[in-house]
Image (cartoon, rainbow, N blue to C red; front, side, top):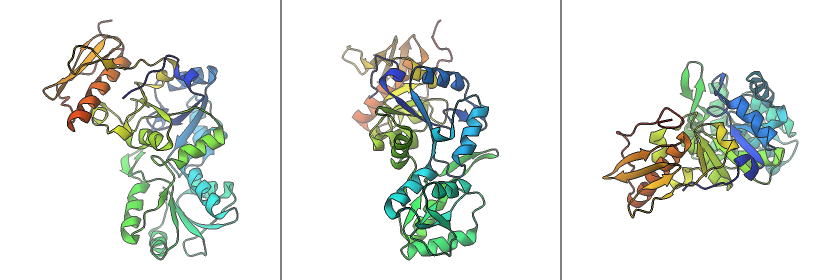
Length: 340
């Protein structure tokens, strides 16, 4: 269930690890209000790190994009799955090791950064690392597949099945990972979310004793926080909507919930059973209940509390019955305060 914080999250935690697409920007455009919220977050004394499963772009390109959007970000504030993968390889084989690179320039830069030597698909190497790269050649994929099947260790930057592009949602690196795994019978070590190496690498690089993961995806950002044993804030500016939220399994449920990054700057009340002996959950003037399998909400209050009451009631019902609550008759308020 959701947790309570009597202090703003900027005071309760010292590092916000922010996913990018769907949290800070969507495509090339900033999420409305994100830059202002993040300025206020850093002014309150909270560090910010920007983390991404996208292994194709080097940190310099990501930081430049953020700066263009009005978000203060240096190269050292950006951590990618390519860097996390390179860190795993360096820790296992040491600087100077030769590694086959199957991916884009972000992956090559990450290998050089930690003193590894990227080589081609036919060259002598101790391991192979793969990541998203739109210019990867099929002949290199075939050669790597054979070498992995013959025993060459394999690290994958991430396993995301989709990637947003200017022409729509397209196949991500995870599609290649599944193809190679099916052919080779080998499951790679994965560095990106929801596995924990990317979050561990972020804390190592940026620092922070009380980190908080901030994301919009349940199956990568929030599940990744569970794997890394850190708390999380789910924001609703990206891919998670009502249907995904009410169906979230326990390992994909956030610690906190907010419609946007403004949730970093405020306390978070916790939904509680409403005390009537029924199945209702209440917070901030809202009461949500699942009756006859259908979720309903009554009351008035802030929009964040509406979402919190809904999540609490839906998850309690899911845990008790194994069934996702029916939300077909549930309308989402479009004002920050109903009736206000």
